[in-house]
Structures are given as C-alpha cells and as structure tokens.
Length: 281
Length: 261
Image (cartoon, rainbow over all chains, first blue to last red; front, side, top):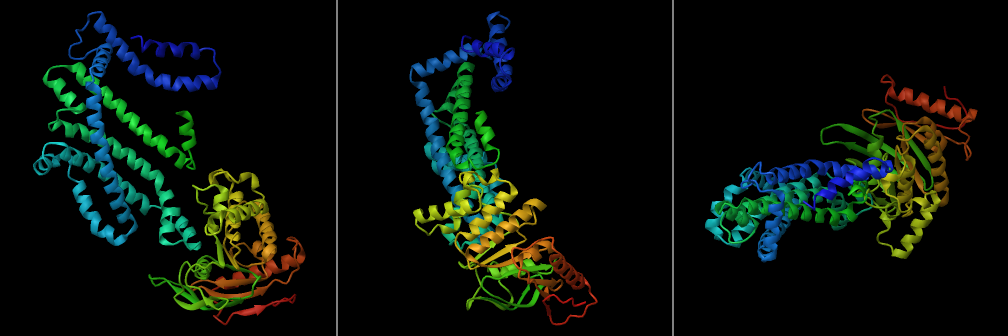
C-alpha cells in the first residue's frame, strides 16, 4: 500500500505546471503504470472492504508479505539460486551450440545444405515433447532440466545467427574484398560487427525461452526452484506463494534481459535509432 | 601502365556483357568510360578491380596480371559503403590496419583534413550527409595511395551542386599523387570536365565504340564553348553507339579541334 501510493501521486504535481519536456519524461512511464497499479489498488481496497475474501486471488500486500517471509527464512535465496543456476547453465549451453552451428551453417553453404534440414525438422517438434525422453535418458535430476532449457534456447540462437550471416550486405563484404581481407579478418572486421545487432536480438529471444523452459523443467519433478514453488503452492493451496513466484519470475526475467541490453549497448551505439531508445531508458 | 587486352565477360547465364575491350592507360591519366545502360561499363570496372574475373582477355597493371583485388588498385562505388559500426576516422583508416598505429593516425588525420572533415572524425557514418559520406569513401580509397583509382558512377546519387563540388574536389585530390583514374559515368558533363580521354561504349554486347581525347587545359571551365564542343561530340558518339544500324567496325579515335562530322 505505502509502496504504491507515491507512484500515483507523482503524476499529479507534474501534470499541471512543469515544463513540457519534463512532463513528457515523467508522463510516459507513469501512464504505463496507471493500469496495473490502479487494478492492484482496487483489488486491495475490495478485499479490505470485505467485498471478497481474497483467498484465491490474494491482494498485493499478501503477495508482498509472502515474498518477505520467503526472503526472511532463506527459502527465497535457495529457490532463486536453483532456478538461476539452471537457466544460466541451459542458456549458456544453448547459446554456445546455437552460435557455433548457426555460424557454420551461415558461413558455409555445404554445411548449411547438410545440417539445416535436420535442424529445421527437429525445430518442428515442440521442445516440451522431449521431456519424457530426456528423463529416461538423463534422469530426473539436473542434467535433463538443463538439457531441456538448452534445447529451447538453441533454436532461436541458431536461426538468428544463420539468418544474420546470410543477410550481411554483399556490398559491405565487397569493401572487405577490395581491401584484401583474409578469411579470419573478414569474419572479425566485417561479419561479426554486421551480425551483432541481430545476435543480441537472438540472445534476448533465447533468454526469454530459457525462462519459459525452466518452468517446464521444474514442473517435471524438482525439490527446489521457483517452478517448485509454483507446484508446491498449487498442491498445498497457497495462491499467494504461486503469485509470489510469478512476480519473482517477472523480476528475474526482466533483469536478465536488461543485463543483455545494457551489456550490448556500447557495442551497438552506431545503430540508427538505438540512441533514442537508450536515452529514454 | 594499366593494359586491358581484349577483356571479355560472359556471365554463367550466357549473357555476353563485355567483348574484346582493349585499352592502354598511362599512369596518371584520367579516363572516363561512358555508355548507355547495359553496355558493360560496370562489368569492365569490376574486372579491372579484380572483384569479378574476366572470362577472356587479361587486365595487367605494371606487368602483373590482375585476377583478384590488388593493393595498388583502389575502388569507389556509387554508394559510399562506409562501415556503419566504425567512426569516420576508423573508416578512413580501414585499409591501413597493417600499418603501425601512429602512422595510421597521422595518415588518417591528414586525409580528414584534406577532405575537410576533421570535425567529423568521431562521428558515425549515419550522421553524415550524402556528399560527406562519399568524401569519406574517397579518402578511404586514397589513403593507401593506390596507383589506380577506379570510380563506379561515384557522384550519380548526389544532387547537382554537391556533384560539381566533389568533381572539383576529386581533381584536387588527384593532383596530390596523380594516380590513374578510371571513372565510369553516365554524365557527359562529368566526363568532359574530368577526363583526358572519354571511352564511349556500345551495349549488347559491351564493346568499345569510340575514343574521344579531351585536350583541354586544366582547370577546365565547364561553360566554355570548347567544353560545349566536346560535350556535343561525346553526346553524338553516345547517340550513334545506341543506333543499331551503325555497323560494328573497329573503334575509331578522334581528337583535336577538327569536327569530324
């Protein structure tokens, strides 16, 4: 309650007198917050007035209290660490495999004709369908979970890298040829920088899928992790715990995505339009 | 000396783009190649650059047969083709990566000053106007001090005012080290202002049609009656080159002040 009120009030003093540029800078994020914060506030009030018992849809304060409670007894750190470890390991493996195979397929026509049809056929299989097989092959513990995440991450990275290499402007490559760049120099000085923007997008898409698949992986039998919190909350009838886990998923997903974005920003300053986006953030 | 000996190019789809093109170009000469669309002028330039191999005949520069891009040959394209992820200064220094950093910095700084873009050294290519970007491209090609500079319609995407400005600027830069310039263009004005010789080509298949020597003193006055005279001759040759009824004879050479018609 006390957390959300100031955010609402901030729109008031700014809306009337301030200069147009300051107004615009504050209004846009404030406008975006209006709907979710307003709804949360309404629900909070509805439960407080006794219009609903809030048992199945707990009010924001209850969710917040659950998160605080989980943090206090150390459970939160344990579950977040477990989930983060799986995502990082799976994402890392998927990125490495996707980048290497995507680069080979993009750069080398023969490899593409050899490799790409198989990869595309595998891509048509919904990755969750592998779960039973992975459990049989790799057991119920960490390996099968990490491999599932890696499979989910692999495809967007592979496609992104291959597509980016294939669409590098022939005219720019020709500039490299006129300056007689060797194969490695051509890759380092022309292809890599040209591919980078699309690669960052592929990484962000891959990371999103990584977060999606970690939930699926933790549903298939885990004793810790945010996915376990979800299942546990369902089985013990604790919706506040489920919502708390969802909120933490959202925070972690957004934070890791943001880390990629700011990590890549110095390398992508040359791009048209990126400056505007970066300036607003 | 750049020697083109019966250079021909037939593409894999059977199109005969260029046939038996021969010319001898002395060091420091400025040659303009002009012709209707599809006359193989860009094909010829790419063969000289070593970007595409000729299917017959040879290109030799100082007795070296050119089959791949060569250090002594620079090229400027119709578009600036700057690398968008490098600053203006780094774009200009792109061909100097083997040189020690200190020498590279000095050469880049000198080139920036020479093309009047010192204040843009740290700008991104996207921040340049079309004319500025093409000046950076010229600087990038000239910094390694090529013996031959090839230009493929370098100013055709620019407005008339910028184009004149850059033509003058190009001559200015050319005077520094006097490389051979081979310029493909479809602009008669440009050919007459810049070139020592204008090679008119005829299309399908691309062949040398006529050679016109422009013996006008530099700097040239674009609007003098003498210039107009040469422009008219190039235009007439162009008209005739597109006329299918003219028999395919050996290319003829005209020069001097005498009117040949």
